[in-house]
Length: 365
Image 1: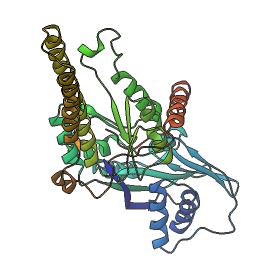
Image 2: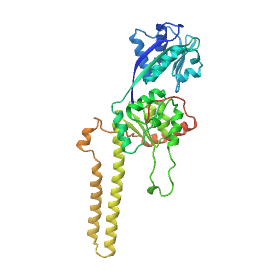
Image 3: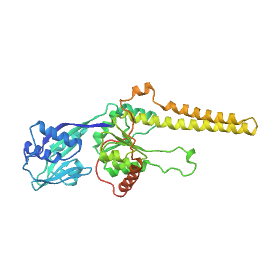
Image 4: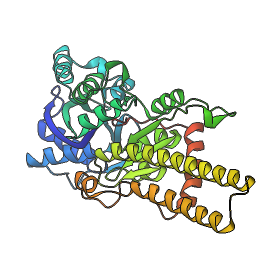
């Protein structure tokens, strides 16, 4: 639902353990090795103040703390950068002044994503707030899905205030917004939403499917276990690997397109089946009545084939439809190694179910 392009709103020093220059240097060193879009945004903000990573600093054991942030050992001192969950686990939030807590709370109420920087020795030495812009087409797509009777749910690792802010902008009901989630939390939510399919008379019963749309590494488990996994072309490689569909231009309007196209395909298949059955029954009836010749039977068979072919051709994109879509040849990525990827996707599902990861995520629908 958001663009994944962050802007830094606030970046301040906490306490007197270090100067702003020292705090920004630690931040650039720690975030410079991370591939998350937020990390590059923070590094760019520091560079605008003329800060560059010191070349003589010793950096070891740089690690991603899934769902929390990053950590590294800088000059023989553990340094952390991440969300409030990380620093509460480390016990550093207890030493933050009431003034700083009030400041952070005011940022959070505005819908910003809050982060902290801290060291093992001095505790929290800096805090920042960033904002991720909502995609222009997000509200239209959500409204379109809801009109089609599709329930939309937000699952995100962001704070409750940030999640509610995005939900209000795009029109997702408050009770369908889930925030501060780890990847395994999303996995469990999708698992609860999925219903066991009936084994008997399945063609006569309405089926219930769960589709997940995400673009981050943290969305991988949910994408893998969903009935339909949809990833964004600009997203993480693991998200595209485990998903069934990839929106190559990362335009959410394609989400409505593939839903409508899927329903049209199913409806056309049912129409063709009915046409074929009716025509075949008519031929059988005329045959038993002795009014069907060999030539007429051949002609009817060819005629039925032409009818279902012409009926199926209505699924081809018209000039009006092509003009209303973004300039992309296909709405989804069809992998050439489908069989191999399907087996790998099944293996990844088993891995996620047995050993779920522990990182947060961006919004998914």
